[in-house]
Image (cartoon, rainbow, N blue to C red; front, side, top):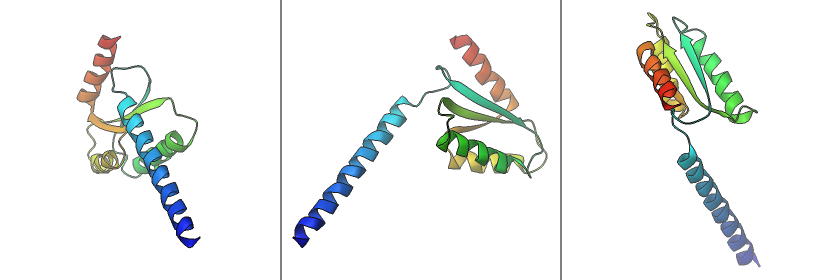
Length: 118
């Protein structure tokens, strides 16, 4: 009886892991690039080292766990900040896959490429 319970728990966890793996693979394969349809949030920030991390984490929390599931990417543009805003943005860009960190020139190129795709 004990051996049956251990095997049942093992197989339940194994199947759960398999379903999570398949779900993540499907999510990664269907994750859109910037030239496809979708809603993208573009944030321009300059000298906001005291506020930017809290703002972005709040926004990302709402996107991941809220009702804003139609948002594909968050593009944060640094407007030549003179404080540590870019360091904070780089750290957040590494933590979250949906956050793209650019400078204002790269952001303009991204917007122009979206216009050309349509």
